[in-house]
Image (tube, rainbow, N blue to C red; front, side, top):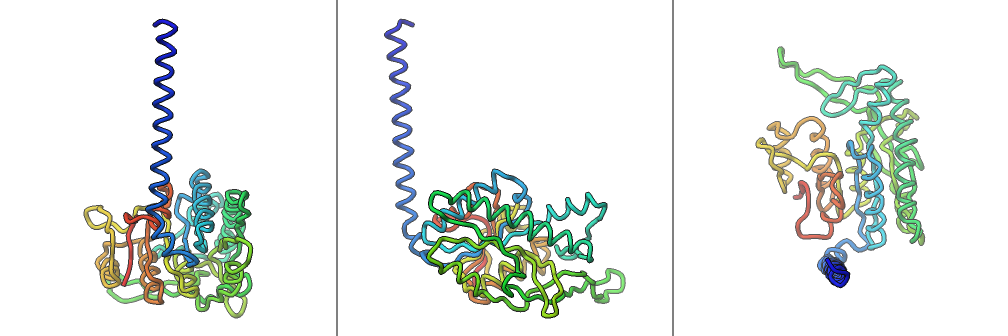
Length: 320
């Protein structure tokens, strides 16, 4: 190829790249314009986000989640994050030679397990998520604030109880879950103060509660998210996890469930294991006044943004 030919070829390549870059710019502008109606719907509304699953252990996913949370805040939404940490707790327990047992997705928690759970949840994970948010929002001074349910009487809890049917005798037996709790009262004053502050804070809450007599309890993060969403009268509750949502018996995603259909999914066994407390949480939150709850895959880039600001949605929506 002659020198003139090479220059002509290079010019064509650069022109094509410029055209593609311009087209991408127009596509971005079109997306923003199409999101305007949804941005207005959620303007100054509270959205409670439960962030959990195996995605918690992936730094790139955590950074993307933090950036999306900051974007929500800058768009006028008030995100409140509740996080889990089951896989991280399990890994820490395995190092100590402790095997975990689960009942309906809830970990049986003795005193030693409780100590590890609080250390992992209120310590390492909570502060890491708050820090990622602060770093992502540095230019606009959006800051993550790490809390646990033990702060400012945020979550008062009591011992959780569960029963299990014996397959042979069909008798119901009470299962002792140890230091697993259920929230009995949510005091959202501190969260509201952070939300209503002149500064841009995003609360990040570890699912640890305390009883009226001072006993610390590990609480299912989905349950905490639902109780907090109800107390704050949130517009939407988002349960980010590591599955696409509720799947039917053929493994296909169920896009939407009414409260009655969600209960049926639990009773029929379509929802099992860890999906049971997620659906129970969604049902309870919607019954308590949250407009809707959605279960979706937090590993997918920008899943929250797709859910809130597009017509397509993502995951499984639970509504009245």
